[in-house]
Length: 304
Image 1 (cartoon, rainbow, N blue to C red):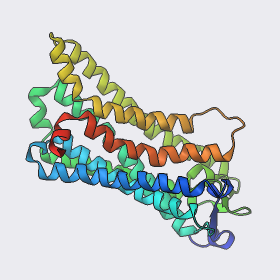
Image 2 (image 1 turned 90 degrees about the vertical axis):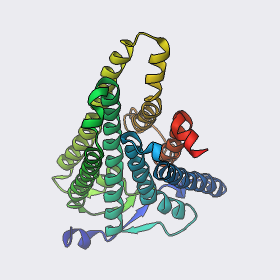
Image 3 (image 1 turned 90 degrees about the horizontal axis):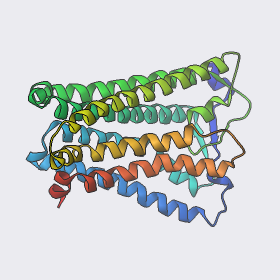
Image 4 (image 1 turned 30 degrees about the vertical axis):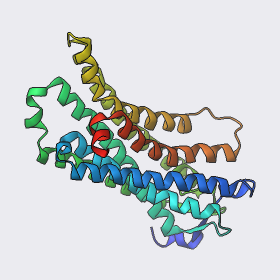
């Protein structure tokens, strides 16, 4: 990562909100700042509630606590820089600072996806194998699963960051994004290996995310089949209610990601792309504490 890259590009210029009407920027800044603060406070409240309420010391809430930590760290890694740039005339970011931001955003983002997958597995074990649940999902096993999620996220972050920043960046140094987004950054790379590296990065990212989604969907296929075998409608509703908050978060998380990254190519202004990316980065973490606190009766009662 030293040497060749520094001889060509030493810093990048983040081009995102610079094209917005200046009168709108304070409004966007205030809106995103409030959402950012709510995300931090909401997740901290969930963590404090789980920590202090002994009835919530179960695998599902341990995973939820780990999920809140990953959301806080992901938000802290990206949003403060975006908020500063909205009101600043200095939009440059150093080469190493850009690499750090990409590493942390990948690490915490993939950790979040891995934790969602594990939470789906937890619901599968609780509903489909209730007699073995306490044995197979002990505190030690849960801690091991959380550790593997963080380790997997760190490996993904380190691997993708090293692959991208091993490339040579020359010519334009303007990133058309509010952060060091991998696809926007790959457009600035030059050299024969750029196209092949781009394909590798996309393949790795998509495979990991779709792999998590496939395992989550598979878990819910077995869960729905088990619920349908319950004779009473009340029992079915009660069992499914334990999955509603997790399922909603999965739909929101992958739904927004699909809208942004799988949208058809076409004439679309950079401003609209910026707003859509901001929606995924700021709005999705903002929704998580609301969904978990409103859709989970045990957690809602404990917070009260």
